[in-house]
Amino acid sequence: MSTAVETVAPVTLTEGAKKEVKKLISQQELGAEFGLRLGVEGGGCAGMNYVLGFDQQKEGDNEYEIDGIRVFMHKAHGLYLVGMEVDFQQGLNARGFVFNNPNASNTCGCGTSFSV
Image (cartoon, rainbow, N blue to C red):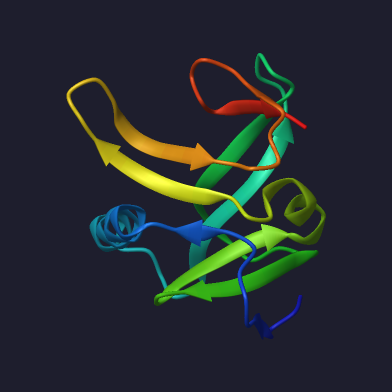
């Protein structure tokens, strides 16, 4: 596994997303070896689902640091996620992480599935 931290992350986290991720990290009392995993997987109504969760670094991952948050992303997923913004919304109609992906040619109504 690579131990080098990449200097520029291909994705951004809004202030709301960073605040929520840091809150979840402290609530779950994760060890220093854990970070936020961003990625994609096949499935969903539009063809691909976003992956967002806490995990340890795996073979083939790049590691980024975004405002003190360790972020892991498999090298192959950057193609689908470059330029994406992850936000966290706390509204009356919806609460949760929102993915604003300029690479998505089609998204489903739930916002967690897309196609390129």
